Image (cartoon, rainbow, N blue to C red; front, side, top):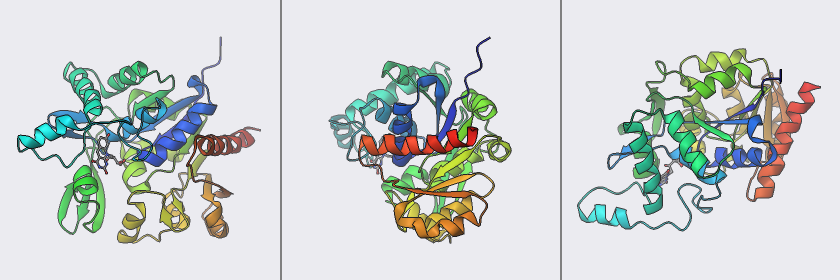
Length: 317
Ligand code: FO1
């Protein structure tokens, strides 16, 4: 009997996560990688189910992503949005014309009764993605940012309010009662390693860990668990991670991120710029590793992916 495949499980959300996911997909064959994506950012716009992080991963892996923005499609136009605006509909969330086709198709399949996992597999397959990309859950989970101006849905906080209100807490509505998606459940049982991509720990990784018993499963997981820090030189590479860490009372540093992963990871990868934090990170009970974590080019993404995988192979020996 052939051995069961034991893939690497990568947890991702947003642009940083998609970059490492792309690197991993370029160095691992399809059976060896499962990419699990945050869906706490999902929201309905104009009656359409939008899954921003799934789309960012899907567009990045299919080579269709806009390289400047990181989200949405390249060569996009916004004519439909302009028309909606003419009808007096709020259009602060920028849905492009081609992007809208994705949300139309997703919504149509969901309304026919398919799970988000099946819909994601269908969309990814149609775009020629051979690796497995799956939502963290097929249930409804919504990230709510508690702020000085009251509770805001994630996109309201992130896009409409440009992260300006002061964040006091983040919660994940529906997460405790949600089940991990079937692919996630299986991967938590049989993956050979877990990689936490350099995604925002509060907004992208925490919702994944909040689903059902996922946090406990990661704590119990027997293979190596590796985190790539999203903070470089005391700043987030992009997005609101640094501002949010400050507001929630965490030091804006890789060490601050590492503290969130105590008990959840064995290896913590930091950028050369943060090499001086290695000793304090190791004092938390994880091994610190120093390399270049900034992924500007495809080469950078592949190089970081290979670096992460080498750590895993060293553990296997
Ligand atoms: N991010 C923005 O900052 N502004 C937008 O108008 C915007 C539109 C958008 C449309 C589709 C989509 O899949 C993603 C979109 N994003 C936008 C990104 C989205 O807010 C993501 O949730 C974040 O990048 C966090 O991962």
